[in-house]
Length: 546
Image (cartoon, rainbow, N blue to C red; front, top):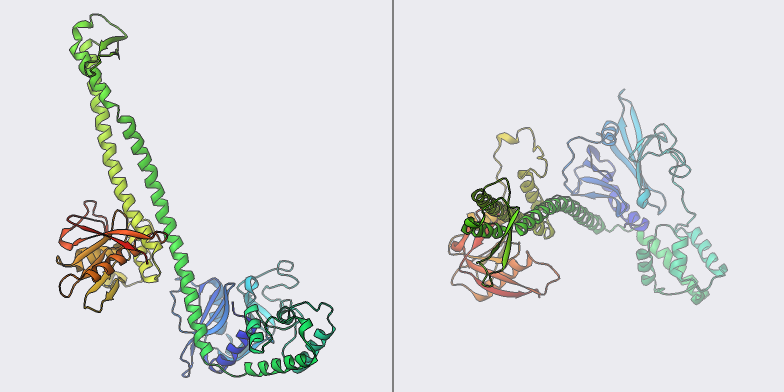
């Protein structure tokens, strides 16, 4: 998480970029994320990001580009009303606290110039963004009546009051004198210097405090270690550190942007993966339940032969059934020992009708078993298909790949289709699939499908009959194509097999078996499921994970 010291250095860098910039557009793509698109000729990063996510609280300039909701939030609409076309005239930080004031000059409905202040409170789970005018709250992302958020109300038309703050010191000279005096007078001499300074100075996290003390050569010191000379050295070091905070390090602007983009997209990927996995796993669970039912029915129907045997034994002994009986005991000539078998009879039926009854039962059970086996086979094919989707999702680290899987689930009716826009039906948009392409030094090329769409395209549309096709044995995973520039190369084969194993593999396994064959030996599966195939005339190779 960004601490107050890091934020101070960041604001020194972005302040000149922000002041004088016009707010062109405001977006609220996520509950804890605001984006202000800015217009200023000197800006190379033209978006101001305000993130109040507890895992990455920040205000910084960014290049991030996000998909925004079709319907903006009420807070977004209010900010657009009050701040769009406004000019940022100042940005201030409260000491080294993570509380920022963004001052924006705009015009109201009457054409009168107004000054609005956006209070950005970056305080972990208590973070908030509050808009005020003349210190009166207009609105906030999170609104609280009194008693819910401590001593202050965060509601429209209430006076804006700062959140409760601790009495920590800044790095100003007079505060440093007080700090050194506190060290001299403290009774607990075995307290670590790092802990003491963190308790008394604003803006330091454990990481930034550790960096400070390493730089001053005071790492791992306790208060009892500090004599008068060392206290003077400590104060001088803190003064120099304060001065260094004023030096603008332009790289911090880009490093923050890169770090946030990585955090956001990792978070977004994680969220989307869980959403897709929940849909797919629900389907897998349904199919497994169906499979158990059909298998149970097959197991029960495995006794169908007993009806045929009884029917045939009864048919061969009709002459012995000379009166209406509830049952008859006859020799079972299908068993070498010729044991006696009891055959139940319906007294209301004639002997020949009882024979027909047994054969009818036999055919009915046999047909039921055949149907159950066909349905079980269908369920198993569906399970293989959805297991392959689950593997693809788990292996996915790219939003584009996740979108392809989303499209696949939408086409199956498992996710609602999202309209792509007013004119999307009239436009033919051909998207290039995001499969992996590896160019080897010897001129060979390896293509790796990371989901069913990519697998289907590579195997049945892109690959030629002379290309080699790879897949992990008896397990859902990537279709891998090896396009050789010359004769088949053993190193290229091993590399392609490694990718086939890696993208369809449990990371806990030391190695996997991969099958490979010429692409002409690969056929589309009769189920016609996307990316599902069967193959013949293959060679197997064992691939180690390392």
